[in-house]
Amino acid sequence: MTKEVVVEKGSFSGKDYQDPPPEPLFDATELGKWSFYRALIAEFIATLLFLYVTVMTVIGYKSQTDPTLNPDQCAGVGVLGIAWAFGGMIFILVYCTAGISGGHINPAVTFGLLLARKVTLLRAVMYMVAQCLGAICGVALVKSFQSSYYTRYGGGANGLSDGYSVGTGVAAEIIGTFVLVYTVFSATDPKRSARDSHVPVLAPLPIGFAVFIVHLATIPITGTGINPARSLGAAIIYNKDQAWDHHWIFWAGPFAGAAIAAFYHQFVLRAGAVKALGSFRSQSHV
Image (cartoon, rainbow, N blue to C red; front, side, top):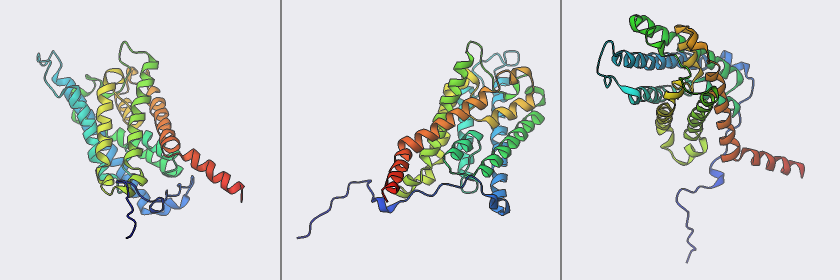
């Protein structure tokens, strides 16, 4: 009789998977690759479309609920519809661009992936530039199509709502971005992808849902930034004092939240610090 070996469901041998090596901090060879420029174009167009659809939704909702134009205050898509517009567009655009650029569409996501050594510094900086330019162009399209409503209804710009302190606004942006970037890391974890073949296909879904849920929670506080390009594009095109008063919140909060999420996923959940320490100790005994 042969001895039966029982393998626990969902378990896999450590030899089945190896962590991919970290990306180099600098890699000038990327400048000579068409795939690099194709990724920049994908990030630019995706962020343009994201801002166009979402800010257009915000302006449309505010015009439909303007008591001077429509006495029915229940008209329009509501806050739930706005959150769906943001989350749904992220789901669609990440699905479309993940295989080309990684589907970042957000400088905070790019920053988190840079800290985790998933992208090079050059790619991260150029992605952020492309995302910001795409956001500016997307909001400019909204203004050109909705010129009669755009300025009247705030241009879709983020701002700290009355009754909330600056600390509350920063905390909301940090926590909201943490949820998003943590979801990105978890949904795209190569170890999970190696174990469950369906994970890469489903990755855009939880990322879109994370954006949707965060918007439900933080629209009343800051209008929900969690994406510096989104906040910058709206602020530049609207260009009123209220759009710039607390604009720093929409950079400091998301970048801090992304950094915390990167640290938590890489060094706590994936035990990056423990692995590095173990590697150091093994080398010291050689």
